[in-house]
Image 1 (cartoon, helix red, strand yellow):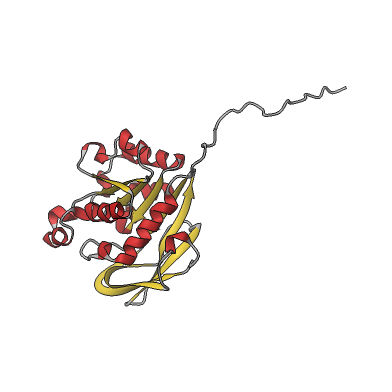
Image 2 (cartoon, rainbow, N blue to C red):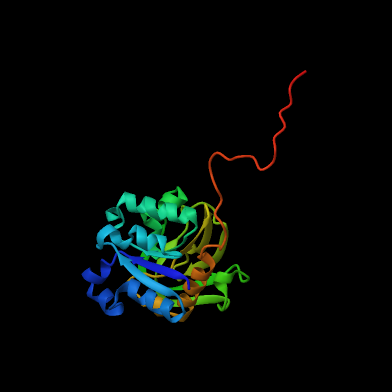
Length: 243
């Protein structure tokens, strides 16, 4: 069974009654709930837990880590970020959601500012599927339409994605690369844009389907990891002596 850890800073839920009403068990709880229903072994971790809930034991037993953050990116300890980065390089999948684009772990793995335009105006978002044969888009129609969402607009300062799965259009006119995949070391990374905390986005069945698909896609490949560093020759090396 694929083991997933859903990480959430869990601050909006404590500070904003509206968010607490929409997500009474936290954004992490809502996501872990539908992942459990989909057949995954889903646990949660939050910012204020010791080691942010991401102990060596938790990370080493996570096939995929899902990350949601916004208010408190700076409070995430650098040593925890480095541990997560190493697990991704070793093969753990990472799914970064919405405002997690500004998280330390995503910026570290991307090597860019990851900045963008944004606006809160209760506007419609339409996520167009631009890679219809990709497994992350399985079961999704031509597009996903969200009645109200926060706008993110280009330019999104990330490296060119290995694959672009979704492109969003917003009622105000902007577009955005909303579903992007990256390979980092032995691990797979998926960035998925929707999920502003004041909207019930994570109850949308299509959004849930994308995240379920992404977990399946991002899980580690069952193979021996490459060995790095000094290596002994596989074949006998014949040394030629100059005559």
